[in-house]
Length: 87
Image 1 (spheres, rainbow, N blue to C red):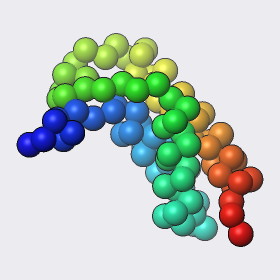
Image 2 (image 1 turned 135 degrees about the vertical axis):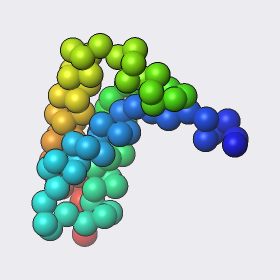
Image 3 (image 1 turned 90 degrees about the horizontal axis):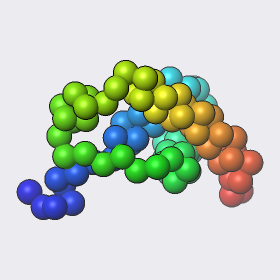
């Protein structure tokens, strides 16, 4: 295992969950990938090594806040990407 594979950003999982919750039939993979990039660039990094550690040490209110921020940024990113699509 390389060092690159040893850590993850917790927000990636939350943003993916928010994208799944807001997915529309017309969404393409390219569009959703751009949405994910824009949303993650607007959120702080929250790195962890083991997901069980993240879930154990994360307070319920903090997790709720992180989920809300992720959803808000995905919604904003959807608008941003839609408005800036190349033709």
